[in-house]
Length: 334
Ligand code: AHG
Image 1 (cartoon, rainbow, N blue to C red):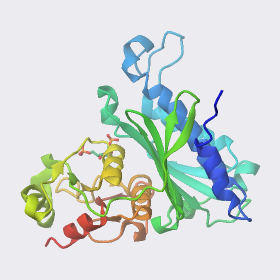
Image 2 (image 1 turned 45 degrees about the horizontal axis):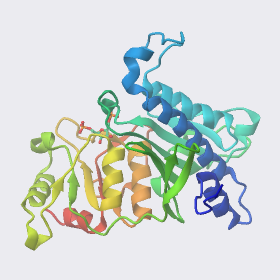
Image 3 (image 1 turned 135 degrees about the horizontal axis):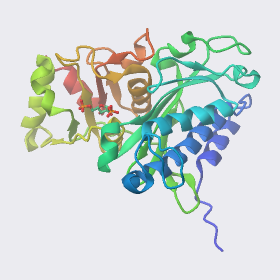
């Protein structure tokens, strides 16, 4: 049998990266491995979503007599479970839970990281077989090791993230994560059950032709946002266009596409949602970090997302993220 040595798994990659740092403890590599494991379990379940009539609806029993959980609760339990049982995480914050959860066993209290995540983003797309995702953010604790993690560990500015990533459950399942050293993408090779490096050193194109926004809210946006969207629609060959509008309603899928192809994603505030819809800590911060590491930009329409001082775990913000030149074009629209 010929072994393809070009294949590098997520574990191999993170361990190799760690070797460059003599003082590294391997905790971050362990945490990323844990996230990969949970993602694989969610991948299996997501791929069964269309079989819900056969396997049972949420709240009912499936054919094996097990209670069927809603997919977002299932995903939350998987990510929480691997982090709780791993050795790298002292506590979590999740979209699915009102408050942070601190792991207060002896091993977890020695862990130097905390993790925030949205276990299943784009949940309105689950029932219609459209891509959904998981988003996560990792911080080094500011509280004392050996003691329980505190809220301050979670309420750090996005700029302090040590790593951030997402999983997209799409035509294939991919895990993308960034650290200060770069952004890399791994595709799940189902034949060996491993995430393998498929998109090394991802760079967001400086500009692109895709803009992603919910047009249905157009008349609720502020004037400068309306002007920018109109300018996108008016782009001609002579002004770098024409632009294309693409909006799935799963930020993971929308931002992933724009990260690879070049584009801008916007979820502005609306008259109905003056603070925006998306969550700063486990939706916007991770994507802002990933896209900035890849060379793009992310703001709340005015200020850099990564500089916002959070005050609560489920805080919302308006969000603009994407290719550097497109973001600058938006910023110049008055
Ligand atoms: P949810 O997980 O509740 O479906 O929210 C998805 C988020 C984000 O992923 C997406 O871009 C946005 O909400 C879509 O919101 P609109 O339907 O308001 O455009």
